[in-house]
Length: 183
Image (cartoon, rainbow, N blue to C red; front, side, top):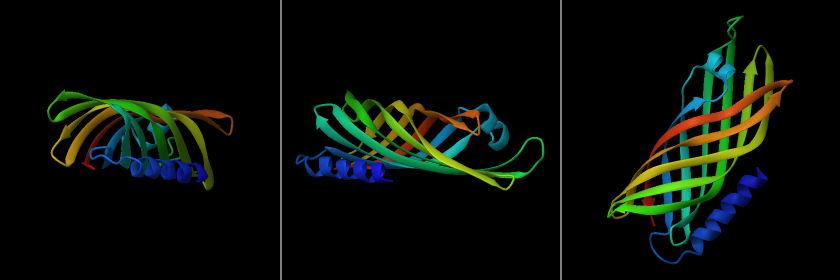
């Protein structure tokens, strides 16, 4: 939690330090995630929809600092016993990216950075939770109006963990759609 607070404070500081217009982008949207772990897909299905929020601050020319947060809760059934299971994942990511011009009102972006993925799983009367550091990388397009934008993004968010001597993969490949404002 301290890491998240520090990164949010850093993001707000960078936003406050940017005096010119069009330096700050704030977006909200939804992601379609294909879980990387085959065991997870067997219990919870092969797709997850997750709400997200993110911010980007122009640091120098096309170089931007990005940070975002997303979460999802998924209910499923254990394969052998048919018992109810519940999974929650929360992820926070921060990194650097480049935003370039395709046309007057269209921009492309590439970004990469670190991700902190927290997980909690409840099944068969047991609860397992923790968090791991991983990576997030993506590329996308931004369609601009005067102060608003719509974005499309594809990428990977992932980390590896070991839970009770069983290796698991958190996150997976994802595609996102968002709307936002440019300040």
